[in-house]
Image (tube, rainbow, N blue to C red; front, side, top):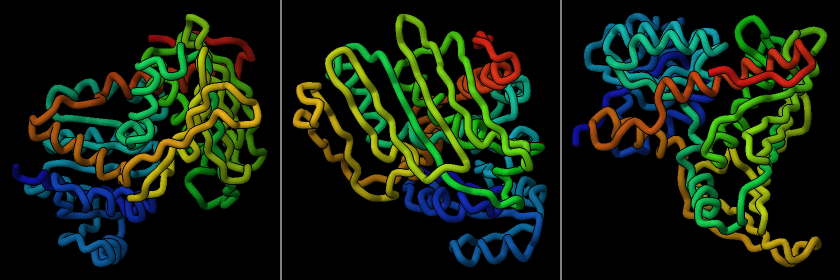
Length: 334
């Protein structure tokens, strides 16, 4: 099958360091061009990554008729506008998370969803550790999944970093809170009903530097999480069922191209005697994500996650921000 020809919108760090190298390992992808608002920046990134074409504007790349698909890692407030522009140019779009600043913003993408494929780039959903854990849950390995806990943090107080700019979608909930929301929807395999949030905002940046939330999936199933942009770096997921527990140690930034482990606890010992590590094969979640999206473009598989999935994820974030204001439980609309 002919490889899908890709263009990259922006020289964002996430793209240069993780996503593009992962995509370049895919048998389904050919990275043909990269664009930046600066021609020099685009040329430097293209040279470093071995990409043939460099463009000094996003519009130049979108006008390239050879490009079939776009990876959009622009700042959050530009995700929807540039995805719509790419779709208007006939390009499929893999867009970084969060796909929008709110559900109404994301819903604009419905207008083009029947013309091109659009998927939010939650690479974790393609990693073997997430897929293996879900398989264990489906097979009843830990009984009925009752509680999912996630802590995800890093420390960043750089005023020039987009994650600390409230006006363009900075803050912990947008940047990393979307991952526990995705985890809850992925492992419970259902949509949450209501949420309540506790938010601490940086007095200078105005962004949420720490957000904690309780998310009710109904039938006695709870997700609780804390995300922070000003805590020591840490990532864990705990999935507790009626008969056992599973732990994912590095659930989001799993070592790229390396083996990973999940930990299964049969609950027989509080001291940990019942914990067993299960090794998983070496993988690159960015390669696997690119494989899936490219195969969907070629018609080999159905699109795994589309616009409606992304809109629903944004509805949960919207409800959490409403809860910050109200101090009460808020229904997830939809």
